[in-house]
Length: 146
Ligand SMILES: [Zn+2]
Image (tube, rainbow, N blue to C red):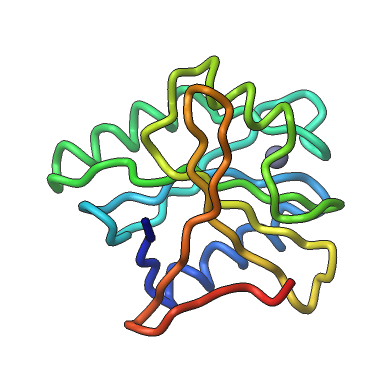
């Protein structure tokens, strides 16, 4: 299993993370099958955005509309970790399962090292199994240095 994210979208993802830092940012990656075509920046409406995220429900409606208009799907949900590794937290895993959103992939951006953000992708199954997915961009495999 993999996800293809164009370089331009990777840079927008990092840009969004740095813009919201020290708060967590969040949003959607829209596309078809395994290939991301668009990024949709959402507002993090959680009351403690420094360690948690909640996507604005209005943004979800808008992302849904864009998908319908352009015949895309929500392929992934992304958010940043400003003080921890690019791995889903226990809360992230529980939220994914409780919300029923286990079809989209989960993209994590870690800003532990601000000059070298780490991006990783995961599949979170309804039985709490987390598997890392390979990120490809522009045809080349991309695996973050650990
Ligand atoms: Zn998280």
